[in-house]
Amino acid sequence: MNSSMAHLPQRPGALGQGGLTLVELMISLTLGLLITLAIGYLYTGSRQTYRLNDNVARMQENGRYAMEMISRDVRMAGYWGCAGMTISTPVNTLNNASDYAYKFGTPVEGHDATGTNTWGPAKDASITDVVSGTDILTVRGVFGSGVTVTSHPGGSPPGSADLKVSVGSGLVEGDIVLVSDCNNAAVFQITNINTSAGMDNVVHNTGTGTPGNATKALGKEYVGGEILRIATFTYYIRLNAAGRPALYRLSRGTAEELVENVENMQVTYGVDTDGDRTVDEFRTANNVTNWNSVRSVRVRLLLVSPDDNLVSPPQTYRYQDTNGDGIPDAVTATDNRLRYVFTGTVGIRNLLP
Image 1: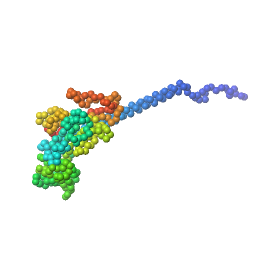
Image 2: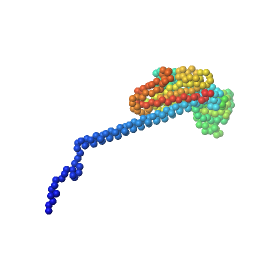
Image 3: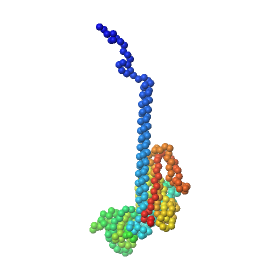
Image 4: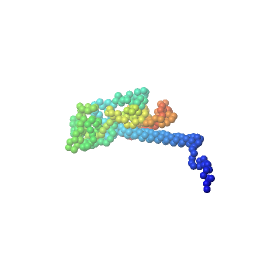
């Protein structure tokens, strides 16, 4: 018996999907595009947030490090070993003792930016490539620990050219050092150092070295005293090899880059005007008449982000007070970098009560 069902027509779609209509296809493409745009927007936003946070973290780290370096040296300015405040300045036996790098009788000195590539007082010729409009800060003193003088043979005048200290002192030929016995102090350059009989012999003759010694006489014997390295450090802003502004520290003709992306440094000095060794007012460097009256230093650093295109519109920040009203002026940046101001006031420990 033949079945009539075998010849019935099939209904459309009964065996599977027949396809998408044009409207359905356009809707699916639009939804996919919207999802892709949303994911891209979220990625871009999170990426920009990451860049911003990363730059802020780097600026804060650099700013803290820069302020710590400057503060540490300012605090130690004018330190003459255990002689402390019993002397106003050590005996300086160096050649050209009045040169800027060896003027150890002036613990702090500065130069205020007064115009395009001009400073007051005029900067020393040894300080080169300073970014115009930024201040210069110089500190002088002993930085670090010392070694004890165990023997100092007499001479005429007193104090021979050979001091003996414990072996392994770490002192090297060419070092400029201070010897102090808590009552007196003298500065000289080591012209030779050798080890004999378990002692380091520190020699300071004349005729060799840069700057060299004008005399080998230190004025007295320093048995029981200590020898410490003494230095002049000058902080200033210059462009590094990458063309970015950076904080540099100059010592004996060598400029060392400390922190990149430091755009400006402004310095004022706390001055004792009545002789009580406390700060009475703050002045810019061109208004300081006696550098030995300076008791503290106030430093303002302007750090700029390593990356551009972080903020939009350009940031408005406050850094310098140019009109004397006590409020830093509002400045709008000319780029889209982020800027951060660090301020610190540091007392000069050896010159305070």
